[in-house]
Length: 334
Ligand code: TYM
Image (cartoon, rainbow, N blue to C red; front, top):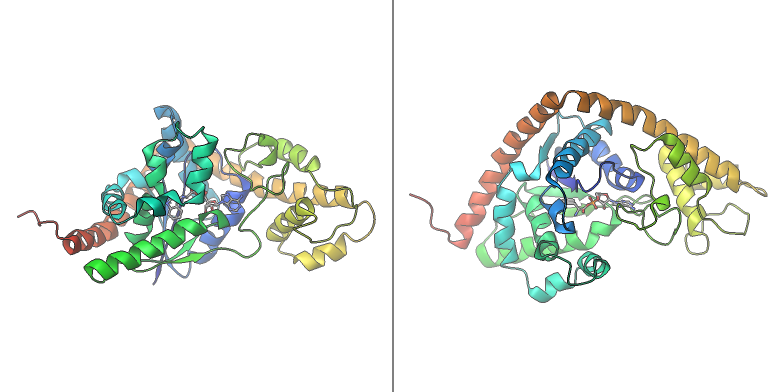
């Protein structure tokens, strides 16, 4: 079976609805047809600045638990922690050395995040982050990478690096395809519907956290920014708030956006739309949270899943790393 790999940063206790709809729903859908690897990218979580060791450990476990609660089957898919597989950091070094400084400087996420942190406060890890992500992907001969829209440029870089390496050192890496969903690749903030929902947004009323009290999310949804036009239409340019709510509704209810627009035709239906989205989000959250709580109640069992995942991941990654080491001319240890 062809392989997929994806990952999320354990930078927060809870995933948000954008992570779930933009990435995880696709992970779950694809795990039947692909050999799947889902990584908690804890090395990446250091790039955002200082994080306490306790927070990082807790968030790593809770992120893994959310993969499983969201529908990843650890019996058939490999769930693992990036730092348990040292090959990731090892391959990243080689990829750093075939990446141009200017090329890395053009990554928009680096530019956004380093500017937000005031420029000089950004660490060098944030700059080399995309090459570590490329290593995550290339180590598994990955065919497809299910991610949201914000990772598209990083996938383009990954493809370029794979092709460059192959051209320079001989066929070594599979060139992966990004797998970005149609309707849900960019779930927007509820308070500023022209920006994506994000873990680090200043105004937290814009993000719906999977593990928050449903009440809190209902409240955020009821006060979601819309417009004064009063008519439910799908127009992401003119009506980004309503378009976002329609997309979330469609993804959770399985109905098409067109059918929903018909359903909410007429005056003053914004409240009804918001209320129904709130119900759908609540219904999603309840069993999700229960499952996460169950998994966290038995951390030894969860750690055993991660250990088995790391063993499986290393089986694959060590072979591909060796191929790359050999290709660049590292002397094999006698
Ligand atoms: P991260 O942790 O920021 O986000 C995890 C996943 O969620 C998607 N996502 C969204 N999708 C739709 N709407 C949104 N508002 C939204 N916000 C986030 C992201 O696109 C992502 O798929 N660099 C990655 C982690 C990573 C990775 C990898 C991914 C490291 N190595 C290898 C794939 C393959 C990141 O920071 O994602």
